[in-house]
Length: 63
Image (cartoon, rainbow, N blue to C red; front, side, top):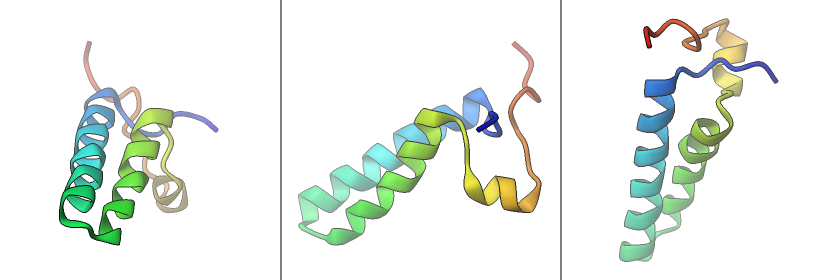
């Protein structure tokens, strides 16, 4: 799997995923499980939807 998620986007995905999971736990909703998707894609740096759409934000950011 080649990186297709940029650094800034990884951080946003991890924070958003953790927030969704936390909200799901706090409100007792299984919808918190949806937070696993952005959390995992942020942690591994690869998004299957981006692959299917031919998108790549990895390496497009300035250091």
